Length: 501
Image (cartoon, rainbow, N blue to C red; front, side):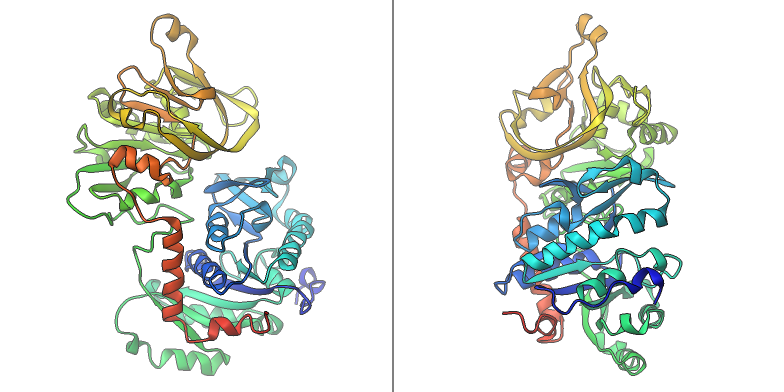
């Protein structure tokens, strides 16, 4: 045991039972499984809360107290709990390959953003521990998600998200691996072997995720693994592409799951610092819609006027706009807009659509915009983080179906966007289609930009634009719980919380 961990004894007196999902790698299935467990335990009549000490993601949601990673937001909803900042006390939002904005307890912390990694971990651990202790005291079950792998020995001395949390909560831990990648048994055994003896005692079973084929072919692997470790394989989860839960990291699979003939392609520009991409998940299930991710002009080839281009949010608007130009995507977007095709910009995408980005405080960067909306954006030091419920005004052209539609969503941005004064004086006026500068439309009616995230998660918007509805999040969460209940060894999930009244 390292000195950094020595002061963290097991806590058998904690009010709640903690169940923790660890992974052999990133993208092994931790977030998905933790969300399913939140709903499973909530369906037992228990009071459940999710927790992840530290999350690195540009997908964030507005909750009580500020912002947290989207995964913990959805886990809270699955647990039938009100999301709050204690569920993800530390959020790292990558701005560059070597730099992240640090959000502590929901608020940006510039001092921590400048601090060296290991010093930062030691500094924030008391906050992390307090948040976890409070959730443990208030709930029957806390479902904890780890990060990456617990066997990263170069990071172990500054661990605040994996085994240090597991020990602090005396958590019953599952170790999950992505068998589709290959090497699953080696990943499981190697991870277990690199843990300290006290840490191994917290691991209660292995999970093979994303399995394809005949499960009988796994033999004798699970038994051999149990002979080596003393631990059973408690679940083999088949590959499931269409569970409906938004992906947390990276661009998710863009195969259309919608029914019927494709009548509209929605092309989302996937720049390097794309943020809040999870808000597009509902489009995958709209009948007739094909959602695709685009990183080059060839991805926009063949689009018709009926198709859309979306410029999504960005954690580094100026840098992503420069990348977009370097790929030649600026001309491809302009060509689509010029022939009357629909273009939608959300948050950072709205800022890109304007004439200029002005950054007097060094927040994001200066630069010319794409010139598709006669507006300018000025970056302010204060960050806007809030929920909104607001209605569209009258819109023209391709977006007219949204006229008068009330939308519930959220804002996370530094920029403030206003009409370009000189262009307005010359008669090129941006049409404000939401109050307080939240949304703007061009005179032709085909280009729309708005600050509000979550538009496509609102059933009213889907009905207004497509005349369709998609499965509710609640039904998605129930489907996840059904899935794990079907594929886990009977009674094993109950054994993790034995003793809870």
